Image (cartoon, rainbow over all chains, first blue to last red; front, side, top):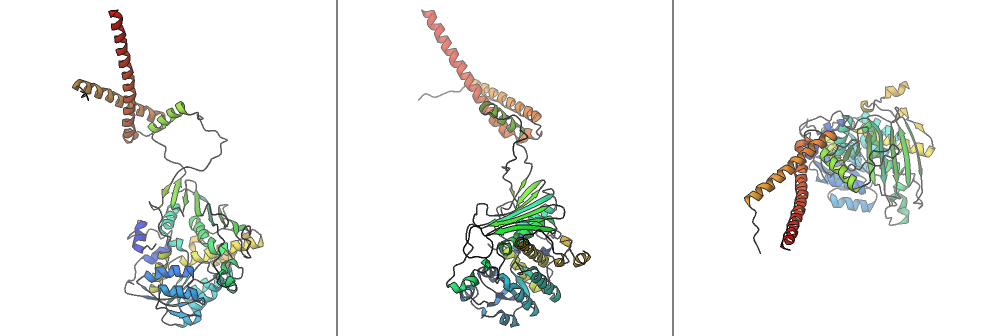
Length: 429
Length: 85
């Protein structure tokens, strides 16, 4: 579902206001300092696979966008993309697309191992870039891409759609305002019960189509799923973890894949607070969720709900009637016992936005990218959040493969006030 | 079918009984607020529960009254038949 920026700001109760600057500084992209209503962004899509086409769907509906070209080497993807934009010029080599001077910006949604070179080449060619997460295959690649963005001054967005999801933005504002007390833990997971495979028309295309399952092209669950949820954790806690440990294995889908089918990671902050992330693709009962656990309440972002620890008691009159009823009909303990375990709270909670979530931020993220590319203004924090989200995944993956508890690699610090990191700080250490 | 006639006097009596039940339920609410450390604003917010409770009490009292009335009628019948004998 698409949501425009007016509805977005309305959902946050911020129409005409800019109160989220501290929590979500990238939203200043919607502050209309320059009227772009008459402008059109000439965009190229590199890698119109399933994710690329989803984003193309949003962009094709944006009146400020002309998708003028696509680049891919897989004909079925090209054919499907041409159904969305029949007039787009097709390139089999992305470098030829980058040579097209009409193109101002590119969207990169190719397999993970190809992102870095494409993004570097695109910025070298003077194009603004939107790159799907995880941005790099390793931490060094992420740093190279981020540095290139700084060097060229071109707009650089990453596919972290939760940054523009109204329920996340609103919840983070509440978290940072202390509504849920002191946040001591963030727990998230992404579970599925399927093999994560795509149909392959010919065996020779197996590694090409199912690139997510092979080490040469992907780091599996850590790079494909963790990226979104780890960023939510650091967004809530306002800092980066100091250490990480984890474990991964192939327990169920023993079908020739090289990446893990289940992972458990633990990110530890300097004050002992923790962020847990896990994924299992052999059981989907708990689906996906990000939980922010505070001393006064809990937020479940995927459900779009929050729960206060203390529920307002029932009216005294009802309490009295209930007690009489229990005295007459039920044999209940008069007072609670200290040894009874505290089971999950039956509290039904409240919706963060007052209603069930309807959008996931993807359309707004693309809209924000278009706005930024047209104005040439990089919104604060957006590249940095994407960079650190990618670093967290890759660092976690390294801890798993090395089977060690690792300290944060300070050489990958960047200047970012939100997390209190800077290259100068790193140099001091 | 026979028409049931409720006299004005009976209506007044029943209204008085229900008002007494309402007062009793209201009194119970005050007791509950004091006992369970509720908020005094519940005197207003719990009026719905209090009203429903007043009807329940009225119903219970009605049942008792009906039993008493039935017992009285039965007793007077027995007394009358004893006198005849």
